[in-house]
Amino acid sequence: MEQLRLGDIIIDVEKKDIKNIHLSVHPPAGRVRIAAPLRLDLDTIRVYALSKLSWIKKQQEKFRNQDREAPREFLNRESHYYNGKRYLLRIVEIEAPPKIELQHSTIILYIRPGTSLDKRQRIIDEWYRAQLKRVLPELITKWEKKLKVKVNEFGIKKMRTKWGTCNRVAGRIWLNLELAKKPPEYLEYVVVHEMVHLLERKHNGIFTAYMDKFLPKWRFYKDELNRLPVKHENWNH
Ligand SMILES: [Zn+2]
Image (cartoon, rainbow, N blue to C red; front, top):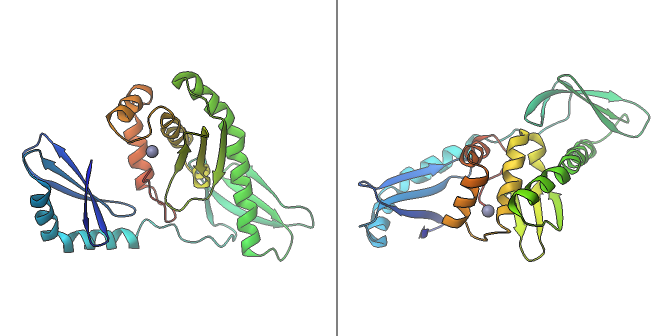
C-alpha cells in the first residue's frame, strides 16, 4: 500500500484492477483511502486528492463531531456496556469496599458515600480489566493451538488509538480495555489479529490470507469496531 501526504492528511492509496478512482473517508478518525486504477501514477492521484481536499476535511469534521461516547458521570440509570450488552447503572452507597454486580440488565456499583467520579471510573475500569483477564487465557490458548504460535504474555491497557498491539520479539500482546464493552466475538477478532502478527508483522497479503483462513468473518468485525461508538478510538493497527 502506498501513501500520500497532503499537509496533515495521510491517504492510503491502493492500486487495483478497477476502472475508476474511488475516494473514501472512514469513521471514526476520518482515515482516508483511495482505490485507484493500476494505470494511474501517484502524481495524478495526488492531483485528484487535492481537488477533493475540502470534501475530505468536511467528512473528517463530521466524524469528529459524532460517534463519540459521552463522558460518563456514574449516576443512576446511566448506560454502561459490558460484553456487547447495555446495562443501566445503579449506585448503592455502602460502608464497605467497592464492588460491582450484574443483575439482568443492571450493573450495580457499590461504593462508599462521597466516592469521587475519578474513583468510580477506576473501580469500573478495574472491574472491566478483571473480566478481560478472566476470559483471555482460554481464548489465547484456543488460538495458540489453531495458529501454532506462542503468546508469552498478554496485557490490558487503555489505548487511545488502537484496539490491540503485538510485540513479536517478546511474544506479547496488549489489548484495549475498551474491548470489555464489546461483544465477545469482537474481542476474539482483535486477539486473533494480534496473534496473527506473530506469524506476519505487516498488514499485507500474507496477513490477510491468514485472517481469511482462520477467521473468515474478520472484515465484518473490523468494520463494526470502526463503526461502533468508541471514545476517541480508532482501529489503525
Ligand atoms: Zn495489526
